[in-house]
Image (cartoon, rainbow, N blue to C red):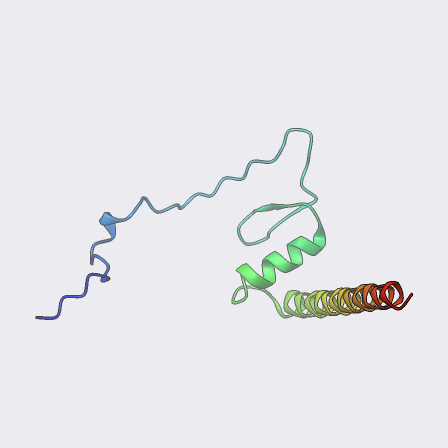
Length: 108
């Protein structure tokens, strides 16, 4: 007899209550710059709104919103690549510097 203990119950009532109305806590001294046109979520910047729409609403967004998301994602990937390159070069230079100083100390 093969019983699988990892199976999920067939009834959805066995799970926690489904959230249908999402509420967001915006600090009193802060007003959101923009809101999502699909779910009305408050967002601080237009860039965050672009990422939100592209990630959370890919099937609902317009072609212009999709193009804006793709451009922002490309810019983000370039910035991340630049950061990784700078970090790798910095680690290499620090390693080289310590190796060079170690060699100078033991050679003298």
